[in-house]
Length: 122
Image (cartoon, rainbow, N blue to C red; front, side, top):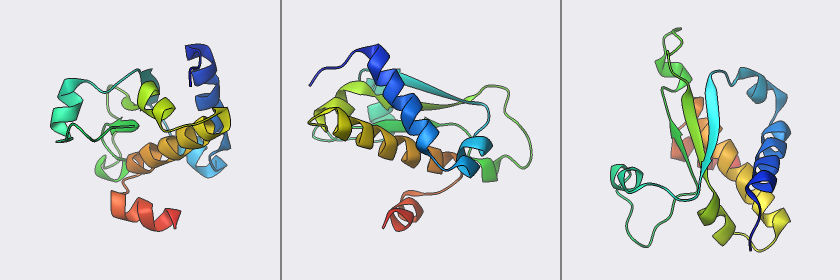
């Protein structure tokens, strides 16, 4: 499956807009960016094996750890285009994968860990 960068960004915007309004309105000072693939440094920091991939990554200070302070630089949510494409079989499944990944990374912004996110999803 292939898709233009422009269409990929449109799907990200649509996915973000589909998140609950209370979450969307609370996300502040967060850049949502795309990359084709995770960098070697990101893979090393997360101790990913060669058979593992990364669909998205939150980098920043979660809200609960901020103690009321706003960081000088924005937090970053990165969505990785090629891994998301490889997990999708058509544009609808790509949108669903983007939305799920974006929600997962936004949940990290709110301070949730993987176990808490998994519990909310099921």
